[in-house]
Image (tube, rainbow, N blue to C red; front, side, top):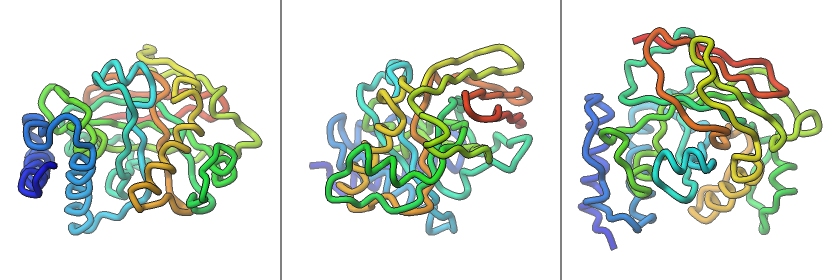
Length: 262
């Protein structure tokens, strides 16, 4: 088992990288490559530090749900992290990059929950029933680890390589929209840079939500009513630069567009 000292050292390394905007070495030298409990303990330590500085948890994000992103990251399974209010830049345009280190952007379907998901058996039907609305979203993923040279425990520890997020106001009920059937095109400055479908996200974004609900309950922190869930990328993530205009067009929703500045 990974020692508490090693977990604390990993938290300190990642927190320093976040604060200084200087990427750090991977943390797998401290927590290993297979100890997921240790990786999530580091994640909890990082999140707790931000909560103590005034941030508030507003939901969760699911990472590495598409084969394209798994290939980009060199991992073979999904993970999850926490969304904090300070990560929400939905009302900002342009969006400041001052807190980011090595950002990438991806298009996703988000869900707002109408009820807790704490059923004895968490089925796809139970998850569907818990969704209030689906929303278009952009996730600005980021890594505190230099050159994105991450293994699975590194990205888990680093709050699932989270950065910022943008969620549109153009919500749809699941009677109006079937998440697995959507298509996504992401353009930067008018050029398509990424494309995908709802089926690329673990076969169905609702299946990704079901996976998350199971994991959340297993970790003793079930998904609650009102939570925002980013269900995972529908296509490869792509880099961007200050001044870029990013537009995600997800079928069934109005296009979601933002500009970034230094």
